[in-house]
Image (tube, rainbow, N blue to C red; front, side):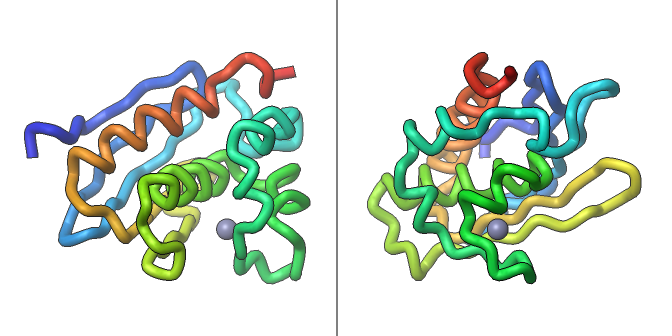
Length: 142
Ligand SMILES: [Zn+2]
């Protein structure tokens, strides 16, 4: 398990490993004080340019919205979930074998993010780092 860090800090959030069990990764996502909780003040389009298949993600958001519409006003933790799913799919994992969920753990702002379908912890660690750097890129933070 040495391959998987226990905490990642970005300019927007602290992400903590809850567990990596079987093929399931569980993270906590906590926005830093003053950092946005949702994507409403972000421009997510550069992310969809970088990861075009994100547009085709199915998302059970209860509002029958496409993921592109959803992504423009959703929690950053939920966006992280979908980016992790996409990076895992890019590594050749069949999309139907990947599952994800994001839930509010504790008000006002601690989220639980779960993504399953990983081959191993090292792969998860690499994708977490890539996903967080994609979410940190300046183009999003208008
Ligand atoms: Zn979703």
